[in-house]
Image 1 (cartoon, rainbow, N blue to C red):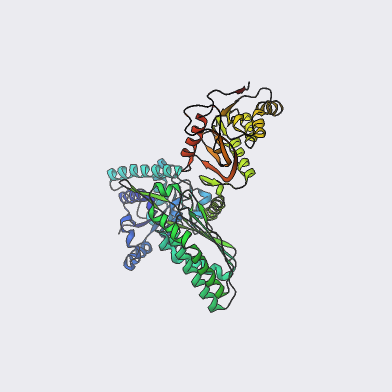
Image 2 (cartoon, helix red, strand yellow):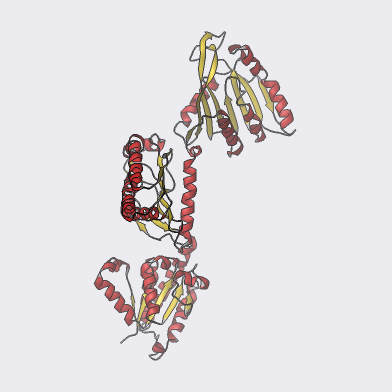
Length: 563
């Protein structure tokens, strides 16, 4: 009867396991490895028994240690059984696995009989030597070549499989993210509910949910709250408090409308606009009756697709966290594009895991959550406070890369004046468009006429002698209906004006003006927007700015160039 060798490997090394089996059989052994196509039978009792019997009768076990081996429950179980049954074993490590990291791959393995798979040309010789040194095999004069042609074929195949495996892990992350996942959010729901119940029962709990329409998440939270409340009533023990924070995509998001995603738009309206007060009231009422303090934050709406979606529960025993991390994807069928969120895998991470990736994944989610809370990251942002608006525009002037030009449009340019010098410090061309003094009151007209002197003074005192860039001043013969700053092709700020009193006809002007030129006092509205180039409204608003500039005098009345 031929000596029997059992090969333990991850599916990622299937070609390598097949080559090993062929080589061993060319040396006079009987070899076994669990083929990929029969892994699906792993839940069958007869299959598991057959697998256990094969391992039990093995004279030797070969373990192919790779990063994928670390994440395979089959590999870990078979490695444990190898040690428990005290089977002689040989380990072939696939880089980046190294001698110091063997126990990280499988804590039960000892560092003996290790072959370095990173040296493909010596693996076959090392394996032959290891087998020849095994007493049971040496008694039979094994390994012994029984088929030279097959031996050569499988040796070459094994060398190639090793080279491919080593190369693949050279370009893949050192740790694979196969910690555990559910195919969809709905399949993960029971785990989410039970984790929330456990967290609430043990103390302060914070649940953060990030998605698009949050339809399923809201139902999951409702069930979790109801069951946590029931648990508290039964136990009679204090629970919570519970904090809930939600982030969703705004129903007016340009991406949802461009995709014609009526389903998600409708869900956002139903669950987070129209129906939200009732959901919130129901959660608060359920918790109040159970004696659980609850703080339901106002949902945060963003106008872009979140890069990181999922559910994070913080406050489990020991102030730990778990994360169900998902992602957004698109499914194209012909001309129809569907946004998929919740229909893809949700990976499970726990800060209680020994795997450092779990801690990192949770930290990354928390960082994204902090960014989602800030409206500054959306494509279009309403900024009520005037100084905050100007300050943010100045930050854009100072920080946006590859800027060449700053265009300013306003009645007198006084509010925007603080943007000019920072732009010149970055060597930009600044074009300033103001109302013609004849169209303004005496006070405002004087401000416009003083711009030249004001600029000369600022340039002389705040810029070095060798400054570069340029600034140009032009008059608009039609008063602007807005104040606007166009910062390169990256971002624009715009604030609407309203007319105070009855406008009066203005004297002289161009015949191609689309509206009668008037002279009237303008009042600032509180509608101040900052729009990035990724925002839905950027191009239309820019066209309005370009149109207003086109009605201005074609030649500047003031030009100043730097060195």
